[in-house]
Length: 323
Ligand code: PAF
Image (cartoon, rainbow, N blue to C red; front, side, top):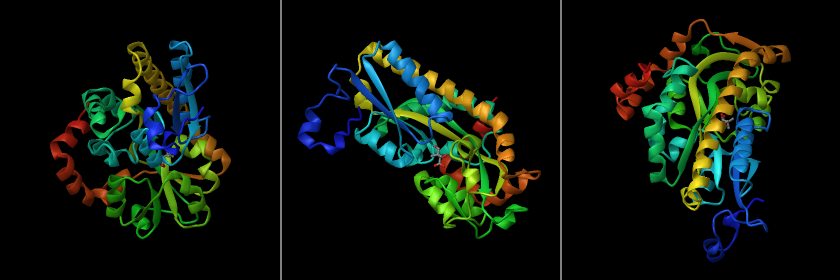
């Protein structure tokens, strides 16, 4: 099912119509995501597949594949060698720079706040910018609030993080925030993380509970600090030419199926947040609630002047004040 246009010669690739490959004349829509099937992204992809195939009566065949290098996934969607991808906003800012505002640490108080901003004017305005950068933003998704984990080194306060190598996403805002805290951020694709943790190339990493659970990161880490330092949005993105090639009904079905995917994604994040911490504790990782979250804010504070210069202090405040 998986049509890799990039592997064909240019002339042949250009002469092919989008995603059509099967003998039955079905349009194939490949969507990749970075987590196992039994996860917040996996359930979203399945909800999308069921909805779109049912609504188009099988005219669109959705193929779900795992690709845990999210930068590569977005490049493939932009370039047109795959139709769609569900990715975290980690590398998204390198494609649609305006979305970086969402990556600022401690911007959102909780899920209601973050989801309200994404569903509201800010989120919709950002989605409208995607076509400028060769992407179609179908729906906002989420990974959840990110938490810090470490291997053998433990942390009593953010001061202990100074000089530690922490794997981050390939995200300049996250990198700047950790640098401000004295950390040596080590950006890499998620696909490179397990060997880096196992070989001790990095001392720790940060990810939301749903990701830690689904990928068994607790097996490679000893301590989980519930820092919830940054909300990690996700995006369901497609290739704009592919979308333009669909008929009107199919485009509407793509949109509603994207909304189903987002709903399934959020439901699973909620479930993982509710039971995941206990599950992880039972599996044996040391879980640390942070009493003094302000200490983490303070540790990253020197990065905020740059964030305000980049996004505007008023804009950041307006997002913080959302209600
Ligand atoms: O850490 C990351 O790179 C992301 O959170 C992940 C795990 C790929 C999920 O989108």
